[in-house]
Structure formats: structure tokens, C-alpha cells
Length: 165
Image (cartoon, rainbow, N blue to C red):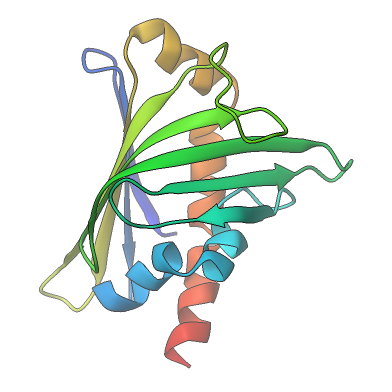
């Protein structure tokens, strides 16, 4: 299983997901840098993502929605703060309405992704989501964020096999 650890740091209002894959950092980065590949894993199984705006550079925005098996759409977006290909991505992560506008009634947070090569030939990816307060963190946890990211990360091995193949 790619997820090796999930830490709920309540003092920092953070959820930290540590994963490892038998792939290079460059291959893992493709899952973030190519919107068609991002769509294949950004969302738990049964809730495919559709990227509708994709500007992966500081100051850019990414907009997407996930579609439930019943056809309901759940919209979200990122304001891109930092991009270091093959190594790091930092975004403001938010829920959105059907027009792509931020839904301020829902908790927003910061997502920091780091990708590092490990000596044994694997690559570690750490996704840290921090929220402004404990209440916001608890709300996204209650919505299934932990289970969702675990399931989403579980789809990555198959995509990496396609890239390397």
C-alpha cells in the first residue's frame, strides 16, 4: 500500500499523508503537472476528477470538480503559490461553487506537497494539509478527507506503471 503513514497533528491543525512509490520523482511529478493524469487519481475511486482550469505556476489557478456515482458534482480549486518541478508544490486549497468561485462557507487550507528520492530507489511524497483552526480541520476530517486521500493515493501505482511502461 502506498500510504505508509497518516498523522493528524491537532496542535498545528494539519493532516499529513506520507506515501512511497517505486518510481522516480520525475514520474511522480507528472501526476501533478499533467492535468489529464491528475484527473485519474485526484479523487477517491468512483469520484473521478475533471480539471476545468489548469495553470500550474505561481499565481496560477487550478479548478476542478469530482463527480459522484449519482452524478453530483463537488467543485474545488487551488491558488498556486509555489512550484518546483519534481520536488515541491504549495497551493491554497478551497471548495468552490458550480461556477468555480470559492465557497467561503466551507473550510479552506494550505496544501504542501514534497517529493523526495529515497536511497532504495523509491520516492516519498508527503502531502500536508493545514487549516486555520481545529474546527476547520475537524470539518474536513468529518467529510472523509482522510479516507478520501488514502483511496486517491491508492490509485497512483497503476498510473506510475503506465508512465514507466
